[in-house]
Length: 144
Image (cartoon, rainbow, N blue to C red; front, top):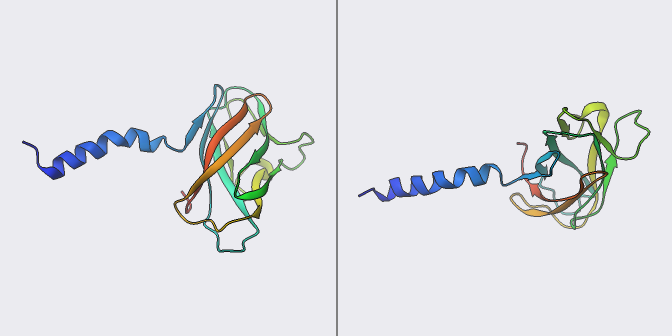
């Protein structure tokens, strides 16, 4: 008969595949990984929204985003990009953060209306030109 510790370890191990993909959101042509922002003290007006988009199988554009914890999310295209939104290029992963993305493309929360506590998750909708809306979760966490 297995010990309680062995049984607990086995139960936890069966949940690992689900935990690893809990913050991945897949459309037919891309995968959005771990949208997150830092915890904020009360009164913080804006903060970067970070995420990765991988396995991009067709050109597209991230046009808009929204969450109930901010009045708006600014979508800042890469320097020199005349089109609205952020370009997604077939076969090229994209990392959006403070200054990590290709050409400075990034997302920024403005008008934050609540204190963002570590470990909380809020709804986040991402709007793409071709893929349409992707419902995701905005995780409040420390750097990955």
